[in-house]
Length: 354
Image (cartoon, rainbow, N blue to C red; front, side):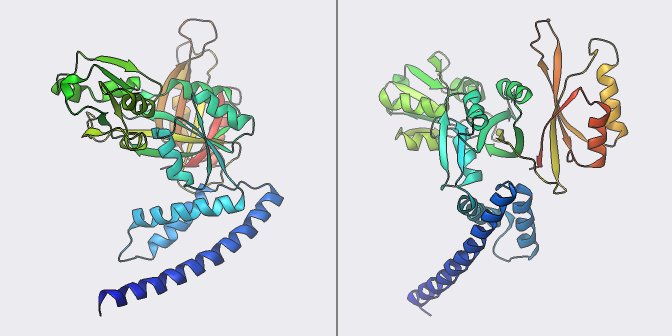
């Protein structure tokens, strides 16, 4: 069989796939109408996981779980937009890691809105200008994003999903001679994440100017041949800033956790995470935190994250606590924890644990 025959076979299979996708989308449209009538959320991460789990269990010889997820992520994104057009706010600008995270979850068909601050992105959902906001909450090397934690404490919106994105930085500039560079732009934390590269290439003495995103850094480096940017490869390509060095981060395992914020409650899926704020009464007295931790243990709840944040009440060194635990708010042990602290725990959302 020659190559042309193989291609004809593939064309025939592609025609079948397209026809089946058309049938799937017709059902999706009907589901969308039913959801709108019952005021059911369009985005159902637990249902998408159920589909991926079922398909993976079939034991495909050619497609592993990652491949199935990659294919069906786009199918899910197209389906959601047919059910109801999605508007997604994110911390911009175009080409930022947050933009990358948003597109990885919601696909290319969504309408995206770039915002200069995390606060603005969240406000766009509160004001019903967008259905979802994608914002960073934690980096594996630099810790939590304080602005995000503080907003979660004040907003009534909920975390409905989390996304983990590997962070790979590149060094981009118009010049081909590294010794001619006079200024380096980047987001403040990226300088620290790439300190080994800067030292190894004798760039420690070069002026560093922090900007609001690595995408903005690539844009500025494009405008001046004596400037450089530490940015994402996507941003460098987006703004046509030549990449001189790739993967310059100190730690190749560097990842950022992003969260999706919206106004609905997920159903339990059996692999859930719950986020909460603990604002403990009498937390200045011995045993206040121990009491909470004891109850977590007593209820057989696995705590995966614990971070203090200033209360900002006007009193020095008063703190509240951002906590992640395994389980869903509707699980018996988790709901019992909230019952024991009715005025001290704020539920921030229960969602599929990645």
